[in-house]
Image 1 (spheres, rainbow, N blue to C red):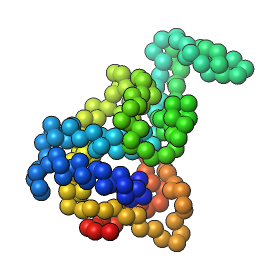
Image 2 (image 1 turned 90 degrees about the horizontal axis):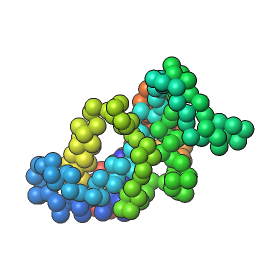
Image 3 (image 1 turned 90 degrees about the vertical axis):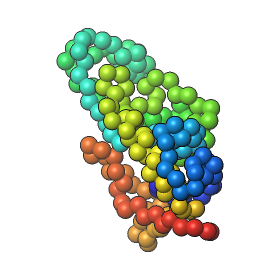
Image 4 (image 1 turned 120 degrees about the vertical axis):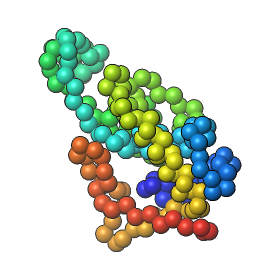
Length: 189
């Protein structure tokens, strides 16, 4: 909601798609939610910038080597012995400038053409440790956004004098805003 409240043009596109796809005031079906490309792009972009779990730890089950990270300049293979704990940050991984030069910007339209490779976009982890609640979470996010923007035309950020220009994040077990996110929903400009 924070990013949408700062980008009225994105809200207009989203609302137009919702009103075109769903019956007036009606409930959405799973198929309808899955068919909305603008909605999916907004959710993906929000998850790219703000993954629910910003850091994770895994244990190497066998001796292995990472393709980079070793050597004097970090460009040689890095050996990882069995039993080693490996920490990684989806928050950092999904904001890599080598994948997107404007990686810090909220740009849902990037998803019209960008198809990240395996492990470049992992807000729900991947492989055998893929979050069991992934599909439920995606449907829930889509449903909530649809219901809000079926009824409201705008989402406006409401800031206080002590708010920082660039919002803060708090990374604990889950990622959360470091300050209140106040959004006013309304109809009309």
